[in-house]
Amino acid sequence: MLFFRKNYETYSDEKLLTLVAKGQEQAFNVFYQRYAGRMHYYFLRMLHQDEERANDFTQDLFVKVIEHAAKFDPTRKCTTWLYSIASNMCKNEYRRLSRWNKHQEVFHQEVAETVEVPCGESGYLPENLDRQLFGRYLDRAISELAPAHRECFLLRYREEMSIREISQILDCPEGTIKSRLHYCLKKLSTKLKIFRPDHLDQKSVDYGKKTR
Amino acid sequence: MEKRHDKLNAELENLLLTKSFAQLKADEKTAVEAQLTQEEYAAFRKVLLESRQLFWDSQKHEAPLTSLRLKQLVRNKQNQSPIWAWLHWLINYPLPTWQPALGMLAIIAFFFSPFSYSAKSNPVAEPVYVYKVDTVYRNITDTIYREKPADEEAKLEQQAKAFSKTSKRLAKNKKQSSPKATKNNGQSRVVRQQKQRKQQPATAPDDLLALHVDSTIFNKNEPFHMKRDSGHSLNEVKGIMDFFVEIN
Image 1 (cartoon, rainbow over the protein chains, first blue to last red):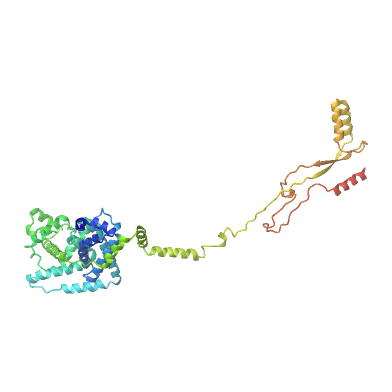
Image 2: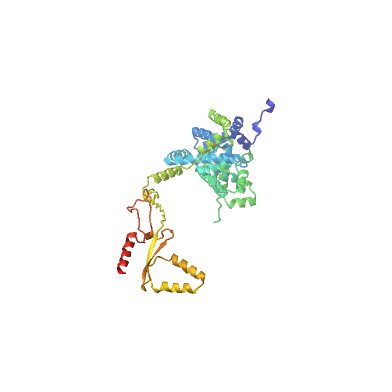
């Protein structure tokens, strides 16, 4: 019997979605394993590191996937469709939050306070402290970006999507995506100017070679 | 001051990820300096590489466990009949709230608006009169009296004698068919003629012999209309005859 068992792991995302639409539980499990982690991280980043909300949103996203799997156009890329739904969910959440406009204000204030760190005589942090803290503050500074910019940054450098794919997901021109990415880098580098800009030069080649 | 681009193009991004400013070739340096200063390039590069490292580490991010609810949803999908799936789609069809709200308002406005209904606009409220007219035909005998010159009959007799036998027969027939006349004393006399009028329907309202109206529909105060015929009654004729006899 094992011989005839289907190996869903080898199936493409689009094929899996077609099977999910027909109610194949195994196909759904494989699909979930492929994307749940990525989507959870995306929601975590987009929803101010709120773990509980990220869990709920991930769950809701997959509910939508199950319900609307039949509507999925197999000629489109699955990730584009999935991130479009996730992006819209986040936009709705921001809209809901903006009614109070409370949560974000408190959060920004908190981040702004924590980024304040003592500097040395050279204007930069001591080298050992610099290395320890840079990653942490970068994480915070990314969270502090405007949602639209943060989303672009995440999709480009975390999900490694092309500019065209991002423009399809966010439904805006490619030029806008490029300028948003430029703005993100400028904003982050300004926020993190207390850190030494050159200490990564030795290991930069290694980071650049990393591919998924 | 030279123009600075505010878009991160693919070439610049690639250079940022792979080379430090010191490693750039002369032409690459020129291209980079058109957009960024050396410090900016270094800062951008550091942010990009650290971000990638940060995101790389997040690949180990664990996914939340598949909930029973999701599994149940998939199972339900399997058991769904096409009709139910269609109904489900219909019920869950995304519709902006303002559309059904506007629809409800339109229905309420239609039923409760004072301008939506008036008796004038109802065609049933206007009375419709239906007249049923029967034309009745009746035979009428007209009696005509006319003055006839005295020499007319003598002329006829002379003519009759002058013509052939057939003419005589004609004259004889004429004599027989002619109305009863008094003796010719060389004076004019009144001749009585009776004529049978042909049956014909009334044309003008005054000529209506009889008008029958359905009393259940006819709602005005008009009575049944009956007009006397235009001829003379027997009593009137008798009176006239007597008058002429007295004159003679």
